[in-house]
Amino acid sequence: MTHFAATFAQPRPALVAFITAGDGDTAANLDALVAGGADVIELGMPFTDPMADGPAIQAANLRSLAKGTTTADIFAIAAAFRSRHPGTPLVLMGYANPMTIRGPDWFAAECAKAGVDGVICVDIPSEEDAELGPALRAAGVDLIRLATPTTDPARLPAVLDGAGGFLYYVSVAGITGLQQAAQASIEDAVARLKAATDLPVAVGFGVRTPEQAAAIARVADGVVVGSAFIDIVAQHGDAAAPYVEAFTRTLADAIHGAKEIAA
Image 1 (cartoon, helix red, strand yellow):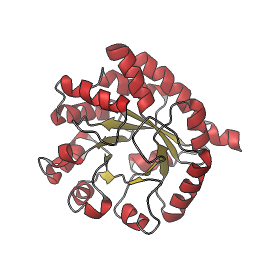
Image 2: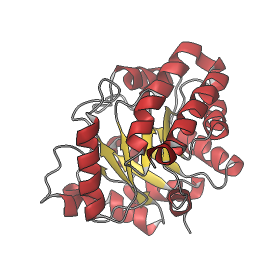
Image 3: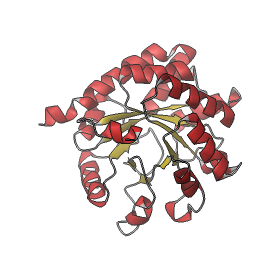
Image 4: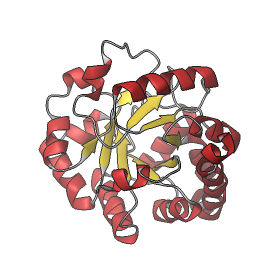
């Protein structure tokens, strides 16, 4: 059983937590996420033009790049995380340029070597993914696809083709961290997606509070939180880990207990 399958087989929704590699004390923050109860870790690959990200994550990218963070550093962070947390699913999330500049096969092989479970590439549409997805699948790494409120039902099979791990539903059209979709629209979208795939459906973009996370967790298989963690790292710098852990615990408690409350 894969790490994703084991995680989403649990009788509770999952907390999917995002931080940017190289921003603050990344190793300590990753450990804090796991200690606080995060079920899946998304590690952002810093990029100079993160077009899908809002101001908080854009700033985290710039802080990381200013420190000189490289792709090699990211894989070293991932490999060290895997050695410390052998059972926690780890996802790299980023943009096509850093993933393909040395060739998709090289990137996929490095992912597998570092123990990465899945990859989210924000800016390669499924219809144009002739190289990265096949390379990842050949290396045993899941390609996690994105669906949005504007994903046409007729296009959904193409989005799902070759997808693995889980399906990430981006609940608002726009950039990360600035707004949250209406609960009713999320419920409708999750129902539509779950009718089209057996993959778990995780919902993200704009989730900042335990209350928001719990509401989504009542209908989804997972809840993705990113900008709220980035804000903590921005505020506390290299000393952020205890604050990250405390906030993670409040989110995890809300998400893990959401369906019990709903019942």
